[in-house]
Length: 165
Image (cartoon, rainbow, N blue to C red; front, side, top):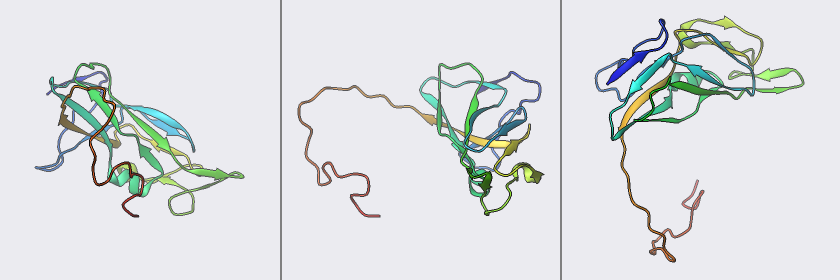
């Protein structure tokens, strides 16, 4: 797949290990994210995704498990040629000036293995941090037909916990 660097510090993706489905997407600039804030983290890359495929933006488990940062799932369509950015939420909660981190204490950014002392609840994503992963997946299409009735199934209209918790 063809990849264009839009920034001199952009990192061309690669798979970390043979058989991996996802490749790392790397921040191209420093980004501060305050508690409750949502922001876009630029990768400095544009992709020529083949027709019939999409790029799915997914969280990295390490980021999710040790921080209050949440990468939003995203879809990059084959026809898009602009810069790929990653949408990131900081779900830290603040009450009366006190923010609660993953361990109930002051939050430190641990991306890239470096501890960076930040005010409680604030995160600093540094240029070069692996912030998300991309997965290339096939796209299927269907045709839609309006109907007055739908076929019966055992489940029927049961949803949202209807099979248990």
